[in-house]
Amino acid sequence: MLEWGMNWCIAAHEYSRLVIHSAVLVKNGKAILFPALPGSGKSTLSALLSEMGWTVFSDEMAIIELENLHVKPINRPVCLKNDAIDIVKSSFSDSVFTEKFYDTQKGTVAHKRVHTPSSFKFLKDTPIGAVVFPKYVGGKATTLQEVASAEGTIQIIRNAFNYHVLAEKGFEALADLADKVEFFSMDYSDINSAEAALTELLL
Image (cartoon, rainbow, N blue to C red; front, side):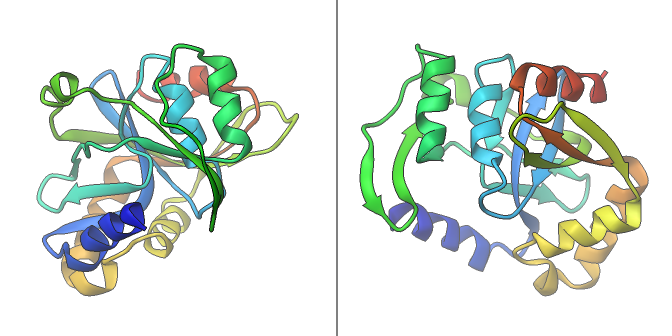
């Protein structure tokens, strides 16, 4: 309830920036947005990449400045559910987790630390380098497929919290984003090959 409440405070009251339901990962001074519906694996991907040289700005929300399309860091842990908890723990045994909370509306939940107070204070608003729509598909090789700008923009709108409130300003920001970055869909099951493919997008 606390986590839901904090998300609602931002989604319902932030009208000066575009807010998208999306994970945000940063590497090489650029951010990748991962817009997706619940259950697509955004948080699991965020937790795994946080141990592979990527910085997590959020596993839940992308907060984008309208003027320059820079995305803001959010100081919060990554929320993992059910099997994803043990997947991340087994992959990176040094990860710092809360205890497990059982029988929630989302099943079993635990939170993974991705920042300390000292590490977070050095993070700065970062330009967006690409937009990737992720989907975990068990046993499938990693595939990145380019998505047309128009379709990618529509998918972002579907995942936006306040696009309808921003109206013309939101439309102009997304039109600018579509001009500046490429959109991709990504199916993956192996995190190492997924990480390599994502790193290439930012070179």
